[in-house]
Length: 427
Image (cartoon, rainbow, N blue to C red; front, side, top):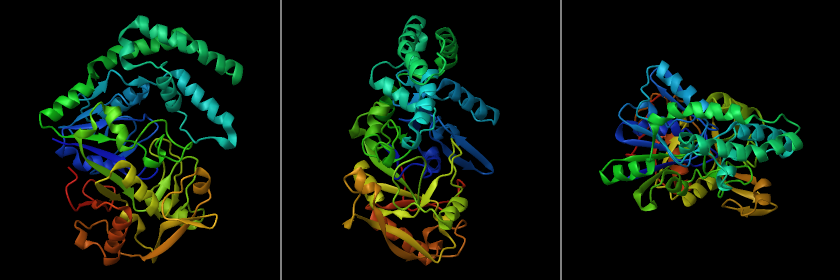
């Protein structure tokens, strides 16, 4: 049976939580395979609104096993706070599984993330300051602390002690900050061990056995394609691989297991943090999109930068991820416009580019080339089939589909669980 990968096709914040929730009752496992609590999903069920930061969206579906896989970095304090919040609202979180190989965000990671970002000034990356980047850096340099290390007090203490030998030198001598205490960190994380133990498992083995047994596994990335460490707008990217290729390494399953890749596209474009954004609007139209779409970060609360739909980015996402289906979100936000600009290419230094330019310099200076589609004024939030959309909205969807290079299989016309038009099954 299939493993299905869900990826953001822009800079994140495309509405992946809604897409995962849509199929939640039709899959057996929902897996977070990368990132940490630097991203978030919003899921609306009836009158209830849930903001998830670290937990997979499948945590809200009682028949689904939610998994935090090995590619995720975990802040235990944030994890338990999020679990408590859901439990207090009557959500059963007992099915959660956490990989023993997932890496832990430590206090020194958070401290270094915050001070280094401030130190960069105008050259800052735009991180959330939650320690994600420094944790992945330690993972790659083989100095990280994993979930399983908490179950061996000797190893845990040894790893923290070795880490602080270097981190405290940087904090005190480079950034003039106070050194962190070994005993305080050791006792805190040793205290997390027994709380975590019931959830910890060999998740790679469990997922592969589930696929062997005919179960359906949904692999949920956070952030988006243009934030991928390899394929994004480097250096203004995240520290992991949210693209579909990252799902295999991040969850511990082979690439031949994946049968479908669902890309999430917003009907316009947003991003949070620094970096190039060709269609960004700095005028009243950008503020209108922000207000209409509620474009504020789920995790950070920061204003999202807003702009028109960018077709070269969508095509790039199709190519890099091998996208088989798109889920187009927030189409309802565009209601009320007479004409809707769509970026079909760029002008960079007098040269026309129909795809994303190869160099960071050209992309940074790229000026969007627009085509204009007729808008609509009807409220589409009550539409429950494609035929119920205004003709101009239908044309907009089909035009984006052609430009993106993969079929649009679902359309979001509102934040609610029932406000989705499913043109063909995403499972």
